[in-house]
Image (cartoon, rainbow, N blue to C red; front, side, top):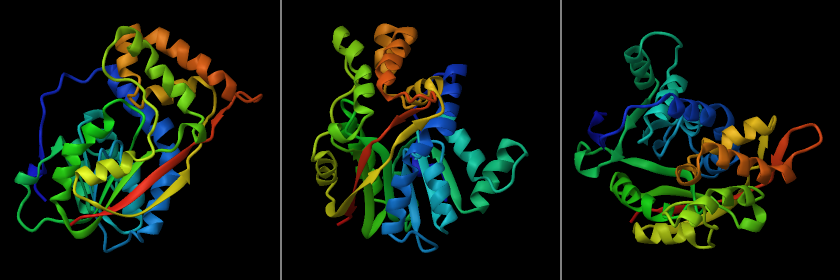
Length: 288
């Protein structure tokens, strides 16, 4: 595969804070969605015949699990810091310079690309039989619209009848984390700025699939509890999702951390751990 799968967007230089957020995502938060990844892969019998394109692959845990089942995986993300961690995870051997690690990932059947999917730049004949968008939609204002163009481009890379998987938050009353995510919206609402939290809607996934020209072919629900060793880890993990960026811009880092901590108190156990049961949905759709 060539690196022309994506078109790069100009980015500001990465900061120490952005790198720390990416590391917190990889080490604390991303594992919360493992039950979702495994449920989807089991249902679709992901294995050696699978050619998977992961949209918003982040630090690569979902790709790593698929590769472990024998799939050939390609991951695309615009977050340079998370993608660097994905390269470390998917390289078969530790150590060596960045170029050596990239070569190792390719030898293992993994390709990790920074940018946005561009169907027009893909070499003729390159297709996937599974496209995943595991980044949950249905909790941030505008997230369904944001996914649309990328999904439509990815669909053109999928073979006819290929599976496309979308993931989203379950009903707010089945997701204890919903109350904590509301913190992402409150400062933004006071400032009347775009972004922030919104409640998940019943047909979020179906609406996105329909706009991309996909035909639903099954769905499921998966329990994905969020569990943290202590309050500090919980705050760091939640901040690493990026859902609080607008709130931080509106009210400042310390204020948002304070509000998240307050919202987490009902979920703190006597031993200091934090536990929030959640339900996630996934939709399997087919390309025309």
